[in-house]
Amino acid sequence: MVSLKITDTKTLGELLRAQRKALGLTQLDMAGVGNSGNRFIVELEAGKPTVQFQKTLDTLNLLGLEMVIREKTSGDL
Image (cartoon, rainbow, N blue to C red; front, side):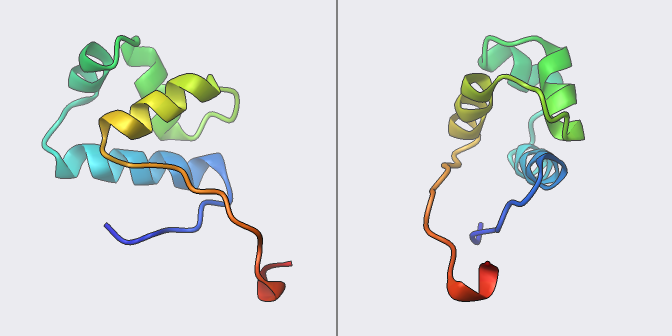
């Protein structure tokens, strides 16, 4: 997967859904493996802005993804 600029929770949710499906997993699979409820996965993929941050990071990890923080370039300001 290529890097993707995430600017909102909706985009993050879409990315996570695409990665989950690419791995052949269902939302229930993710909830079970990630020790979270199915509702959390549904809300995360829907882009709910108030989901728990640590659970989000854990889900990224389960999907083989990571978050990288960098300074904006001058064109991004």
